[in-house]
Image 1: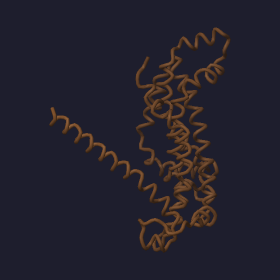
Image 2: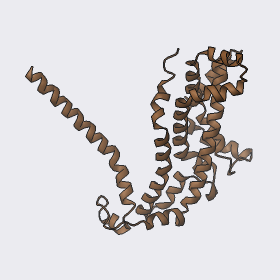
Image 3: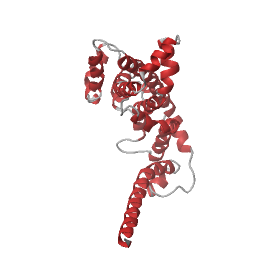
Image 4: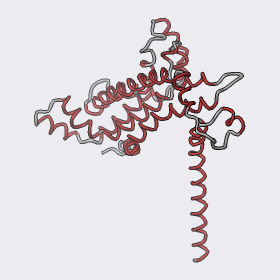
Length: 279
């Protein structure tokens, strides 16, 4: 009995030590980027791991103003907010129609969106580039909206359709009997119920769009239209790199992601699992 207890305690100790090491491995890179952004270039080149002797907030000014991070920030924010709003709106409407109505092409439309989750989207960059050039869609302020919205629609439709299926259809019938219109039912009754799934969609769509790099690199060429991931490449080159300013720019690009995650993280697990078991 004593040996079993000792083995149990040793196993817990080993497990906790492994979890601690894993947590440190996840947190340290972020902490390293933050305190490295507050060092001078000479300090960083002398010892990249040591803490700064004096905090250099000037790196943030260089990144935001001299490095034109504000310009890339505005472009990323415009593309991301537009994509999130349109994806949530369209996916909610399509998911409601697919889950509540039975019509001739219902299964085909649903399968069409599911197949969209299996397509390697970055393999479409060259065909999309050629099509955008041919139809005059290349290098416009709305250029990135189109692929971002199209690529990110399938998963939200799948999540919301599964979620709405768990809501009893009798709720719709009761609302209609009380005189509620379809728009009222969707916005005032179903939308609050779908809040966990929508929170999950907002986080996933925001992260994917905010961090997207290849389409922004290929489909736009104007500096004012490029997004943050592309803008970060301006801080390093073949022969010289301003690492401390790059670190400051990376911290600035991370802040919106952290803010959105902290605002919605309580709902993300619930939203991912809510539609797993059908009622």
